[in-house]
Image (cartoon, rainbow, N blue to C red; front, side, top):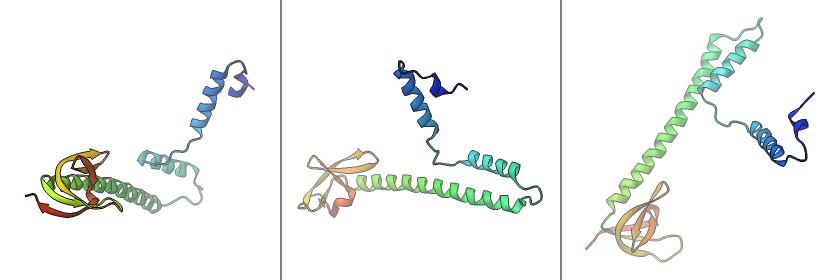
Length: 145
């Protein structure tokens, strides 16, 4: 029998590396199940069930309900994360041209006027004296004089 491994020769390291990469890729499990995966599982269950003891419709409905609930929870978590990011941007914008006191870690507090709002990845940073600070570092807010 000819196998992919038998086709590899020591004289062809590129083919050997490609086969090793393909073999590794095929062994990486999928961590996220979607509705298509669920429907495939249901079909496999139906095809392999004991004909003398078939599953009832209520069992499949229960499984579908659980999967739907899980999917909705995942979507809701994503929506809440997006809302939190938007809320942080609005909070940062409300501090523009205001005098704030920030304290990052154990360093001494810094007081200054927020001159700009910059994004660092998904989180907004307040620019005070040319240096960025997290919104969570804000200790006091005053109207700039």
